[in-house]
Image (cartoon, rainbow, N blue to C red):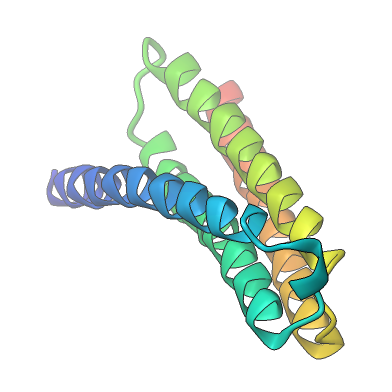
Length: 144
């Protein structure tokens, strides 16, 4: 079907995006760890912290987007592939939580409390969404 093929193309783009985000996350961590202790209160350091929190936040968003596509596929998935879709949901939720941990570690050092509140709120929304999506997939496949 057309939707299936569009989802495959979108998922391939997300996979490439994940690889790029991992590279950027590594680079930003290296930048952050290169700051001398004396410079850790500077605006430049705070900006680096925000950038470093941003890459895993996007990873969290991409995990949720990917899982949302899986919900649509669950209605068309044969019983032979149902476990693959359930496993994908488990792995995407684990990816979300892994990214969330990386965001949280950086938020603890960010002085901009408004930024911290916005990011935490976004993570909470994404957390609720990924749990709902996984439950929908699970229910649709276990009752099929």
